[in-house]
Image (cartoon, rainbow, N blue to C red; front, side):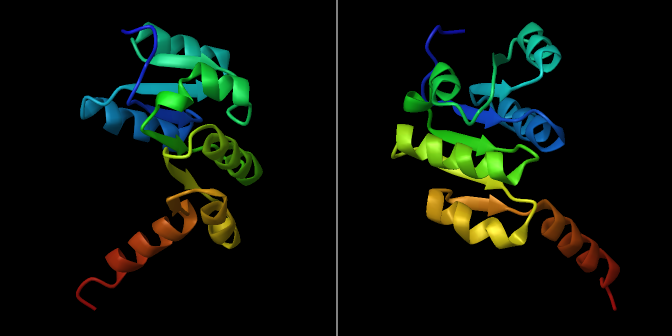
Length: 140
Protein backbone atom coordinates (compact mmCIF):
# COMPACT_ATOMS: atom_id res chain seq x y z
CA UNK A 1 0.00 0.00 0.00
CA UNK A 2 1.32 3.45 -0.83
CA UNK A 3 2.25 5.66 2.12
CA UNK A 4 0.09 8.53 0.87
CA UNK A 5 -3.27 7.46 -0.55
CA UNK A 6 -4.72 9.50 -3.40
CA UNK A 7 -7.86 9.27 -5.50
CA UNK A 8 -9.27 7.08 -2.75
CA UNK A 9 -12.57 7.02 -0.87
CA UNK A 10 -12.73 7.75 2.84
CA UNK A 11 -15.42 5.96 4.84
CA UNK A 12 -16.26 7.56 8.18
CA UNK A 13 -17.77 5.09 10.62
CA UNK A 14 -17.43 1.33 10.37
CA UNK A 15 -20.83 0.28 11.64
CA UNK A 16 -23.41 -1.63 9.61
CA UNK A 17 -23.62 0.98 6.86
CA UNK A 18 -19.90 1.77 6.74
CA UNK A 19 -18.95 -1.90 6.61
CA UNK A 20 -21.25 -2.49 3.64
CA UNK A 21 -19.85 0.56 1.83
CA UNK A 22 -16.26 -0.64 2.42
CA UNK A 23 -17.14 -4.14 1.17
CA UNK A 24 -18.66 -2.77 -2.06
CA UNK A 25 -15.79 -0.35 -2.70
CA UNK A 26 -13.09 -2.98 -2.13
CA UNK A 27 -14.95 -5.48 -4.33
CA UNK A 28 -14.70 -2.89 -7.11
CA UNK A 29 -10.98 -2.37 -6.52
CA UNK A 30 -11.35 1.12 -5.10
CA UNK A 31 -8.73 2.21 -2.56
CA UNK A 32 -10.39 2.89 0.79
CA UNK A 33 -9.38 4.55 4.04
CA UNK A 34 -11.69 3.97 7.01
CA UNK A 35 -11.96 6.33 9.97
CA UNK A 36 -13.45 4.93 13.18
CA UNK A 37 -13.22 5.64 16.91
CA UNK A 38 -13.18 1.94 17.80
CA UNK A 39 -9.60 0.67 18.15
CA UNK A 40 -10.59 -3.00 17.78
CA UNK A 41 -12.32 -2.24 14.43
CA UNK A 42 -9.34 -0.24 13.19
CA UNK A 43 -6.94 -3.02 14.21
CA UNK A 44 -9.09 -5.68 12.50
CA UNK A 45 -9.28 -3.63 9.29
CA UNK A 46 -5.52 -3.08 9.32
CA UNK A 47 -4.94 -6.82 9.74
CA UNK A 48 -7.13 -7.40 6.66
CA UNK A 49 -5.01 -4.96 4.67
CA UNK A 50 -7.56 -2.14 4.71
CA UNK A 51 -6.05 1.22 5.58
CA UNK A 52 -7.74 2.58 8.72
CA UNK A 53 -7.31 5.62 10.95
CA UNK A 54 -8.25 5.66 14.61
CA UNK A 55 -10.07 8.86 15.53
CA UNK A 56 -13.10 11.12 15.27
CA UNK A 57 -13.97 12.02 11.68
CA UNK A 58 -15.19 15.47 12.76
CA UNK A 59 -11.54 16.39 13.40
CA UNK A 60 -9.59 18.17 10.66
CA UNK A 61 -6.45 16.42 11.88
CA UNK A 62 -8.02 12.98 11.55
CA UNK A 63 -9.47 13.74 8.11
CA UNK A 64 -6.07 14.98 6.98
CA UNK A 65 -4.42 11.80 8.26
CA UNK A 66 -6.87 9.87 6.05
CA UNK A 67 -5.75 11.96 3.07
CA UNK A 68 -8.89 14.06 2.64
CA UNK A 69 -7.07 16.62 0.48
CA UNK A 70 -6.21 13.89 -2.05
CA UNK A 71 -9.41 11.81 -1.81
CA UNK A 72 -11.93 11.59 -4.62
CA UNK A 73 -14.87 11.00 -2.29
CA UNK A 74 -15.98 10.55 1.29
CA UNK A 75 -18.83 8.45 2.67
CA UNK A 76 -19.99 9.78 6.03
CA UNK A 77 -21.78 6.81 7.58
CA UNK A 78 -21.82 7.42 11.31
CA UNK A 79 -24.92 6.86 13.40
CA UNK A 80 -24.93 10.41 14.79
CA UNK A 81 -26.53 13.08 12.57
CA UNK A 82 -24.72 15.96 14.29
CA UNK A 83 -21.33 14.27 13.77
CA UNK A 84 -22.23 13.55 10.15
CA UNK A 85 -23.12 17.21 9.57
CA UNK A 86 -19.93 18.43 11.24
CA UNK A 87 -17.85 15.94 9.21
CA UNK A 88 -19.46 17.11 5.95
CA UNK A 89 -18.68 20.74 6.82
CA UNK A 90 -15.10 19.91 7.80
CA UNK A 91 -14.42 17.70 4.76
CA UNK A 92 -15.82 20.35 2.42
CA UNK A 93 -13.59 23.02 4.01
CA UNK A 94 -10.51 20.82 3.49
CA UNK A 95 -11.30 19.73 -0.08
CA UNK A 96 -13.64 21.81 -2.25
CA UNK A 97 -13.79 19.15 -4.98
CA UNK A 98 -14.42 16.02 -2.92
CA UNK A 99 -17.68 14.16 -3.58
CA UNK A 100 -19.53 13.78 -0.29
CA UNK A 101 -22.20 11.17 0.37
CA UNK A 102 -23.69 10.92 3.83
CA UNK A 103 -26.48 9.36 5.79
CA UNK A 104 -29.10 11.08 7.93
CA UNK A 105 -31.33 9.35 10.41
CA UNK A 106 -33.61 12.39 10.52
CA UNK A 107 -35.24 13.21 7.16
CA UNK A 108 -35.41 16.87 8.25
CA UNK A 109 -31.60 17.14 8.12
CA UNK A 110 -31.37 16.16 4.46
CA UNK A 111 -31.50 19.76 3.16
CA UNK A 112 -29.05 21.00 5.82
CA UNK A 113 -26.52 18.30 4.87
CA UNK A 114 -26.82 19.26 1.20
CA UNK A 115 -26.35 22.94 2.06
CA UNK A 116 -23.22 21.94 4.00
CA UNK A 117 -21.75 20.31 0.89
CA UNK A 118 -23.10 16.77 0.60
CA UNK A 119 -23.90 15.69 -2.95
CA UNK A 120 -26.03 12.75 -1.81
CA UNK A 121 -27.89 12.10 1.45
CA UNK A 122 -29.29 8.65 2.24
CA UNK A 123 -31.95 8.27 4.87
CA UNK A 124 -31.80 4.61 5.91
CA UNK A 125 -35.20 4.61 7.59
CA UNK A 126 -36.90 6.05 4.51
CA UNK A 127 -34.96 3.75 2.18
CA UNK A 128 -35.97 0.70 4.21
CA UNK A 129 -39.62 1.73 4.40
CA UNK A 130 -39.70 2.43 0.64
CA UNK A 131 -38.23 -1.02 -0.08
CA UNK A 132 -40.72 -2.71 2.25
CA UNK A 133 -43.60 -0.83 0.61
CA UNK A 134 -42.47 -1.90 -2.86
CA UNK A 135 -42.21 -5.54 -1.79
CA UNK A 136 -45.56 -5.52 0.00
CA UNK A 137 -47.40 -3.98 -2.94
CA UNK A 138 -45.91 -6.09 -5.75
CA UNK A 139 -48.76 -7.45 -7.78
CA UNK A 140 -51.35 -5.65 -5.64
